[in-house]
Image 1: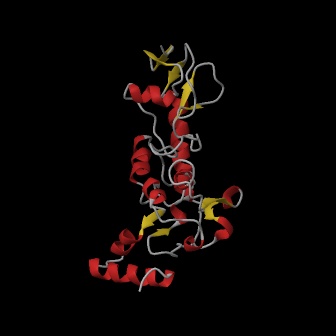
Image 2: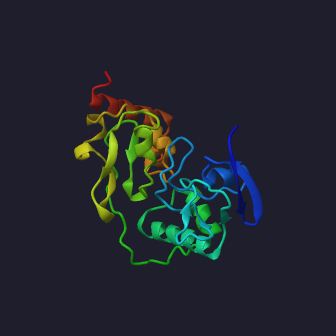
Length: 234
């Protein structure tokens, strides 16, 4: 029989299995913390800190997606510290990354009252769109380094390991080994990385062409021509 812990969440007493994370408990009572880096198909890493909650007696806020519960925990999910932290994270991301195609993050900014113009002189992540294969494009100006695509390409789904992280500090970026074009990597173009991307930094080539006004026949011709360049068409 699994042992349970009793904790208090926003004044509510809750019993939960002892191996649960705070986020799992919050989901069980329909009060999930907001997420950016975590996805149902990938392993939580606690990178974005958007899911933080306040635990009484703790000096710092706790990322709920990776923090295990303990007996007697008293947790606050919407304290002033928590709301301010979530709002600031969104404001900093919005200042340096193009979030125009990230509806979930736009909704979070509205929910937490984020000021979209708070950091008007922030340095932005400027990168050219990488269009090097017939299946998807990579627009890393929209990338917020959530790590989902790396996890999907690696141990969590595909075990292909064609993408990882390159650079340091602000210049860190999702990249291939030696920044090689995707067709020259171990990528099998499964599309899992595109599926988990929260900002459309990775976008299917069909969607990319449709946004440019191409119809179905034109898209088919474009993709066929690109496959020929890769040596996959006749």
